[in-house]
Length: 253
Ligand SMILES: NC(=O)c1ccc[n+]([C@@H]2O[C@H](COP(=O)([O-])OP(=O)(O)OC[C@H]3O[C@@H](n4cnc5c(N)ncnc54)[C@H](O)[C@@H]3O)[C@@H](O)[C@H]2O)c1
Image 1 (cartoon, helix red, strand yellow):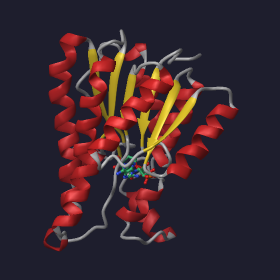
Image 2 (tube, rainbow, N blue to C red; image 1 turned 90 degrees about the horizontal axis):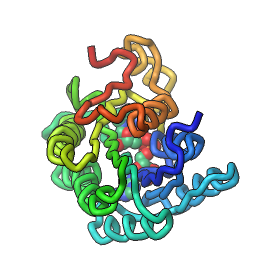
Image 3 (cartoon, protein in one colour; image 1 turned 30 degrees about the horizontal axis):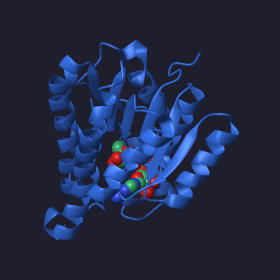
Image 4 (cartoon, protein in one colour; image 1 turned 180 degrees about the vertical axis):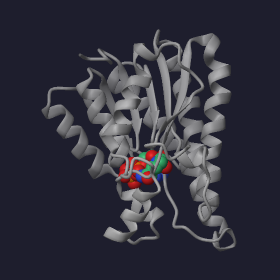
């Protein structure tokens, strides 16, 4: 059954990992997509794949760390789709584990400009369009680390904590306008970003060590986050807003 029939969705970070899986899932669920990412080849590839399965997908290459690119991404998305019902803010950057005194300002600024500022700017630019939708939803991809921090990831954790707070704050602010805002909080997920969290080491041992910390004993798969995103964006979740929804195999407990 299509849970997102005719819905127009903008997904950032759509070239890879959770964003690509969410785009494919939304297309299967009946949505048309604008795929935003700084990786132009990547979004073109995912868009081709979705179009060859018969759905609408508009690739929108953009570096969301740049405010001008954010505005252009929203303009191109609206031009391609005719409006916006759903915004999924998934683009993000990770970090290697390290003591906080080894995190320099440039890394901190990059983490905040992509993981926080671009989310704020995307929502601000999309709001006039979301306000015209009768079923508007914003899905932010935060992290399990927003709920349960661990040592070595201070700057990334702070950025995802900000996404969680922004979600709850905007859910209250936008509820009277019937715009829902939720955040998904995945635990370690099997995507290219995981290699960052493992300090650049993609070995069987490093993956097993991370998986062991998850009570269900394995990494989260991107399509498992995408399935929850589809539900959260659907009419079935019409009374759900301001929630930080864990997709973490029990890691937050
Ligand atoms: N992988 C994990 O373990 C994990 C866990 C919890 C939350 N998350 C979050 O999930 C989201 C998706 O991450 P992923 O794991 O799929 O990683 P990923 O690296 O596979 O995908 C991230 C995407 O964001 C894009 N991106 C990065 N900077 C950008 C910019 N300035 N402008 C436009 N696009 C940009 C990249 O090009 C890439 O396609 C991120 O917000 C991440 O923080 C990941």
